[in-house]
Image (cartoon, rainbow, N blue to C red; front, side):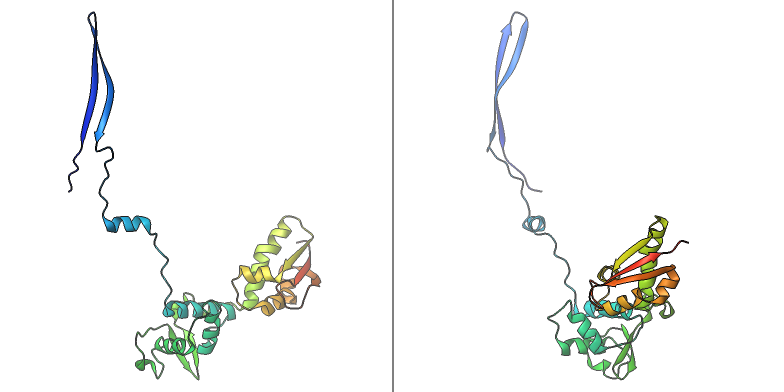
Length: 230
């Protein structure tokens, strides 16, 4: 505990009038004029510098990329090269050899796993350069992984078709790029467009595709549907 030394000077005046006495405070002086509370340097630094987000390690990037790859493709099977190219989209500074080494280090049953430091258990090595994501990191069972086209159809039905029918609309237009963005896909526009023009979607949703506008297989490709009555 630290002691602070200061003094307060108060100037008073006393007024007597018959049987009444009045006291007036004329002035109050603090010496010194400013008293500062001591602040530890470490505490000051915490106040001045907000915490910066934790930087992703290469292991974080590998695991997140693998999860996204499984979701995007609808299957739990990929090559290290596929993971690298997908990871490079958001991490252009990645070194190919370093990335490949850490993928091997994350697959305990890979023949070369023992040669790499910082081993993880993200993957199961399938041979011939192929891997699968370990079930405990997949977070869902493999039989519940939906194909991208099925995910598109389910999403469109739930978010667009069913609400539009409920509101009594007779037609509806959907842009492929919006579906691609909402599902968090990466470079899956052809899959999205294929699902949006499919007979399976029309049958599931009881709708009729009436018009396709814009470039073929583009984010701006627009699909117009006639909504049949339930």
